[in-house]
Image 1 (cartoon, rainbow, N blue to C red):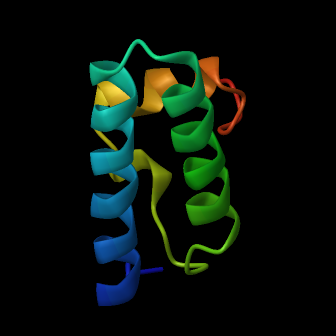
Image 2: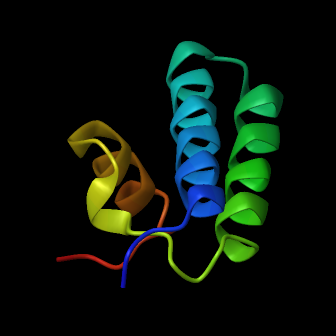
Length: 70
């Protein structure tokens, strides 16, 4: 199924949140960002294509157990 425009925007939001996660070392900021990622992923459009995430984003999401392992 083709990824919708909404899903593409949501994918960008998730990628940005992952970038924020990687840039901070503060525990509470990281926890807040992880919770935001959980929320974004759980409410994402059903057409969101996880294979379109960057390699870095996929790796980080797998480390956080937010994506299934390959």
